Length: 381
Image (tube, rainbow, N blue to C red; front, side, top):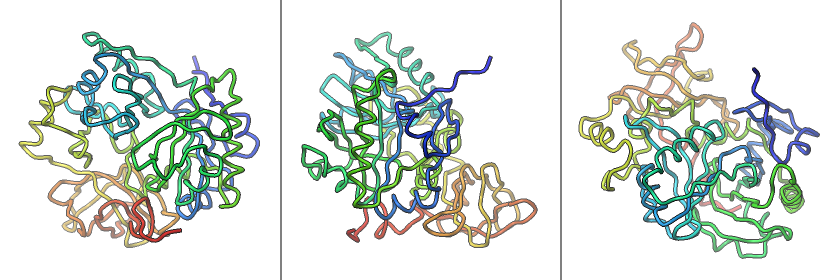
């Protein structure tokens, strides 16, 4: 039996102007005007994405903090209300079940936002492991719309219709405001490498998407002065790749640990027991054998998933997990896993593209100059 294709609250808007595609079971915009113009709008000004397909659960109760610290690798006890952190959940072998962002709404109430492809898997994993904790896990994905407003002009765009001073919300902090008279929860987070916000429209069920439509339309109108563009999954993928961010199912999965994936900064081994801790402690002690790295093409060519990577001596040393032609940098970029001894920045490698072996080099993330682009940029727009 063919699984029914899902749609977000904004499907009727998207289908009017977007090239649609199916991703993680959802019919979503691939692009509106094109991947490159949408990508560059986010890097240089502002773009808006519908990300309502992502999974969202509320974890609440007296044991909420203790429970989350048991199922994730980061330390949620460090979060104050209205703050967030990036983290992963692991299986007992240390493999990544998913990566996501955790928001502390109140002392005993958290919001967890995870990948669309893992909505059911993650919810079931949380429920399965919550039995000995006094918590309630509520699936709210279909009643909450979610947009990402990203780029150096994101704050100015939203400020035009916000009742609160958004400059007071720092990176990985969040709060409540009204956008065009609709109550929203807003966080300074994103998946593009740029400054920006993710907007949660709470009262926007699939059966009555009025608030979602009103908020999206108001943001588009507010951003016209900055030439805002609605953006699809194509630009979302090229942007996250330029920033060196993982895509679940490509760059990370249950056979890859966060230490191998260069995500060790979200693994707090000093915490009390958490799922996967023993395996990660063992790997930390023994050392990893492979590492996720950036791949910048020197010769012409685009590295694609599963392409083999070879060292200077002709031996295979790894494989590509994600790759594209960078709209900003105008050359091929990718990421993948190589033997840890070959993972040094600046190492020259060869990527097997069809029957050729063009040169590339190992680089750090992000691929772009962080002083010119991204949330750390020093050049004001």
